[in-house]
Structures are given as C-alpha cells and as structure tokens.
Amino acid sequence: MNQTVLLPGGAGFIGSHIAAELLDLGYEVVIVDDLSNARPDVIDRLEKISGRRPVFYQADVADRSALDRVFTENRIDAVIHLAGFKAVGESVQKPVAYYRNNLDSTLTLLETMATHGVKKLIFSSSATVYGAENPVPYTEDMPRGSCTNPYGWTKSMIEQILSDACVADPALSVVCLRYFNPVGAHESGLIGEMPNGIPNNLMPYITQTAAGIRAELSVFGNDYPTPDGTGVRDYIHVVDLAKGHVAAIDYVNQHTGWEAINLGTGCGTSVLELVHAFEKVNGVPVPHRIAPRRSGDLAFCYANVDKAARLLHWHAEKSVEDMCRDAWHWQENAKNL
Ligand code: WQD
Image (cartoon, rainbow, N blue to C red; front, side, top):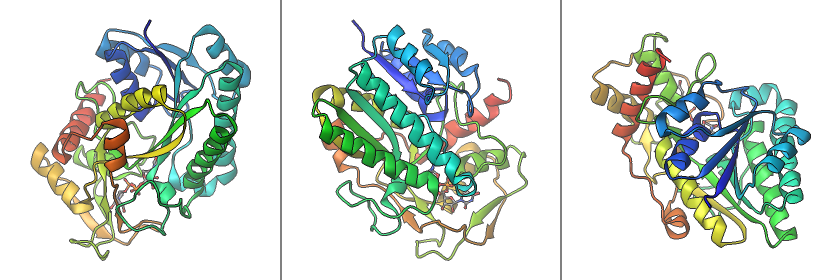
C-alpha cells in the first residue's frame, strides 16, 4: 500500500513542486489549501505533469471541522505542513493576522493529528530563524536568533511548539526544514512561483523585469562587505528542495523526536552574480540600478548542508544556471496558462 502524504498549503509554489515529486514516485497526495495565495487550476496542472490527480480540499487549515474531515476520509501517514502567510513586509504591517494565521493553523493541525494518531510531520521552516546574531554558514546547532519581522517569528515560534510537542509525545517525529532561498520552477513550465502584485523576492522580480512587466530591478545596496558589495544568498532550485522533502519522509518514518535541517546548496551567490547569470543563460537583458539597502537585510545568508547529507542522504544538484533557465521558462510559459 502506498503512503499517503497530506500537504496543508500544498497548492502554493513550494507545495505544488513537492506534490509533483510525490505523485511521480507513486505516493498518494492529499492537498488542503484555501487558495488564498494559489490558483485552483494548479491541481489540473499537477495532473498534467504526473498523470495522477491529487485529492484536493479547498479549506483553511485552521478550520477544525474541515481538517478533521480530511483526516477521517483519508488514512494519512505523514504531513508536510506548508500552510502559512509568507510576505515579510506584510507581516510587519499585519503582525496579529500573521501570528493568528500561522500559529492557529499549526495548532489545529497538531491537535487533529493527535486525534487521528498521525505521528510524522515535516514543517516548512526558514533560514530566517537564525536571525542576525549567528555567523554564516549556518549550522543547525546554533541557537535560533532574533527575527527582524513577525513572519520570521512565526517560523521560530512554530519550531519551538513542535519541539515541545516532541518532548511530550515520544512517538512523534518532526523535521523542521529550514529553507534558504527557493527559486526556479518545474522544468515542465507548468508550475512555478506566482506572486500577487509587485514581487518582494529577487528571482520573480528579475523574471518580471526581463519580461518587461517591471521597468528595472533595484539592487538593494552595493556597499555590503561581500565580494561585489551586493547581498549574498543561498539560492536553491525548488525541485531540489522538493526532493529534500521526499528524503525527509523516509527520515521521519524511521525516527522519532525533533530535528531541524537546512535545505540549501551551501553556496552563496550575490545579487549581481544572479542577475548576470540570468542574462547570460537566457540571452535577455535585466535592466537594473543600484538602490539603497532594504531594511532588515543581511549581507550574507548561506547554509552548512552537512546535516542534510548525513541524515537525509540528500544534497542539491541543480546549478544557478538551471535555476535561472527554469525560472525564465516558467515566466514565459505562465502567460499562456
Ligand atoms: C534576496 C537578495 C535582497 C529584491 C526573504 C525572507 C525569507 C524568505 C525568502 C519567504 C537580497 C536582494 C531583492 C529586489 C534586490 N521568505 N533584492 N532587489 O531577503 O534573502 O529572504 O525571502 O518565504 O524569510 O527574508 O530574499 O529574494 O527578498 O532577496 O536587490 O528587488 O536580493 O536585498 O540581498 P531574502 P529576497
């Protein structure tokens, strides 16, 4: 009997790529998503990619009776929890909404899992939990730091909640995957990142600028203590990231307790390096100019990836060029979807 994996928030950018990997590998996939930041036809596109259709419930994960129904109607083996608000800037404007939504959905999920005896959970966490205090590369044994925004704090708080839950229930198995900067898209061009309005993140801003939707990219600061003065990040291809989740399912199946694991490449790339790689691999210009620093940004953010290799037997395989090519393919293809 194939394992059934529940993906709360599974219709979004990262969840849809995880769903595609799981369907390809023969897992049964159940998605619960309120579609507040995803399109309903992503389910059709997943079916197009894999030839198999995930079970889909349009519901808020914090809706206890809706979630209870999902667990009653499906024999869930493991959960990959991706539901949450994720816009850093918006979280500063609407902190209460962010804490309410992200914590509430997690607590409801944990209670419903307990009611139905489901013990395996993978949580979509973020490198942002390292805060500003820790030196790069980040290792998982570093203490979580002070986040610069409520979005980041919700990730940090949820990690703590999950760790406490594991102490109380020794049968529970939780892996918090700390994502670095997921970019790129599925090579089919059928799923990818679809930001609402003006993108906050670098790669969608680059693709929209290359497509002429935005006039130019603002490079936020060129006076950081980095080789070319622009911010350095650990960009990871979303398909590699999705494969890291599949590896984490094997891990939670064989272990109990709480672990945090970085999902990155271990390599830093600057803003200008990414822009130039994108222009070169795709043969399109990305008009850009240097602008003031964005508040809250760090000079460097990249992972030590030894723990993922050791515990998950996983490492990222795709290059920055792959990320740029697939992001552009998606941007061009998404016009027709
Ligand atoms: C990357 C680099 C910017 C836009 C954030 C959150 C994190 C996670 C991912 C998600 C930085 C520079 C960006 C632009 C630019 N959250 N930049 N011009 O800040 O590393 O991480 O998103 O769910 O929690 O903090 O990613 O893509 O915004 O920025 O120069 O228009 O690109 O200054 O150096 P970041 P990013």
